[in-house]
Image 1: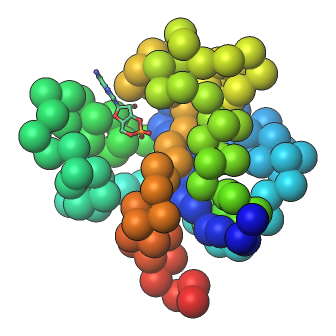
Image 2: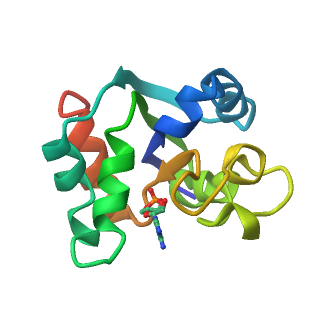
Image 3: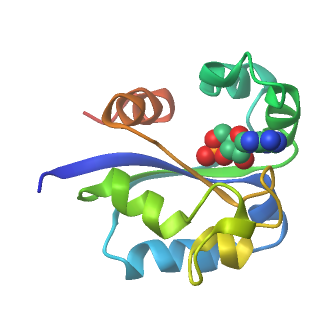
Amino acid sequence: MAIERTLAIIKPDATRAKNAGKIIDMIEAHGFTIVGMKKMQLTREQAEQFYAVHKARPFFGELTEFMVSGPVIVMALEKENAIAQWRKLMGETNPANAATGTIRKLFGTSIGDNAVHGSDSPETAKFEVSFFFPELK
Ligand code: CMP
């Protein structure tokens, strides 16, 4: 299995609830190496560009509004099979369907306020990591 990089975001609901430290702790406890990390307030333009793939979805406005509602923590994570492993640790998109012990089960409260984001494929990971960490080679 190859070492991969993926993008993780701790979303505004989780930073507001002061759950960021617990989530970062879980990331490290599961063997991910944090190779980049920034706390930032996204602009609307950044949120719209980042989620451009969802532009046609009915929830696009709600999603981008939420993503600019407070600070986020963006992280580039490295591990063997990192993309799938991070998605497994996050749990299902809707916290109601997420497995026990996953981040979204523990800290998410709705499909929108679901605590964290993760890249869903190698192509997306490449785009998303370079979106926030152009300095990472
Ligand atoms: P994320 O992994 O960040 O990728 C896209 C996000 O859209 C997803 O997590 C959800 O938080 C959000 N999303 C998906 N479906 C809905 C929905 N029906 N209503 C609001 N937000 C949604």
